[in-house]
Amino acid sequence: MSESSNARDFETPEKSFREVKKKRGEIQVIYGPMFSGKSTELLRRIRRFKVRNDSCLLLKTKDNRYIGDDDKVVTHDQFNFLKALSCDTLSERLEEAKQYDVIGIDEAQFFTDIIQFSELMANLGKIIIIACLDSDFRREPFGNICQLIAKAEKVIKLTSICHYCKEDASFSARLTAETAIKVIGGRDKYRPVCRTCYADIVIQNEDNLAR
Image (cartoon, rainbow, N blue to C red):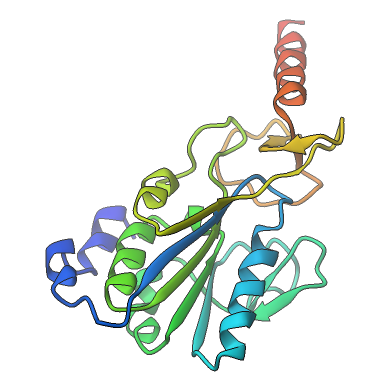
């Protein structure tokens, strides 16, 4: 399904604004590099809303980064998880999502309709909690996450620990020669890195290509 066809599944912003409920909705974005605890923080917030007896829906992309995780959000340590629904586009779950108070979305950078979905749900009074990468392995903006951040009420950037020097890591470095933007993997394919170590990797790769 194309991005343009996804967009047609949603009301225009002007129309959804007229549906804003007195119950205040909002968009919360948790972003950062790989292995920074984004999914862990997402699950913590969802569990907190469950304690309040809010109805919660958890959505995830069909990435299958770990065997058997089709129906759950799993953190990289594989010790922390909650049941979730998988989908290729958020519009697939649009009508179902309207029945919940709180909607969590993991790996949101892979959803092309994340902005339309989040805006509509927040305008309808829902709490939207999003975990995502802000940049890809090239340190380029990932999908439309930067535009999403501009529309969010609450934003937090997490850091990891640099694999090489143990300082704060804000970036994700890919270990393989694959050039596609979407390459699913864990520590077998990616490392969290700081600015200095990222630069070292770039220089090393350039030197290898020059040989």
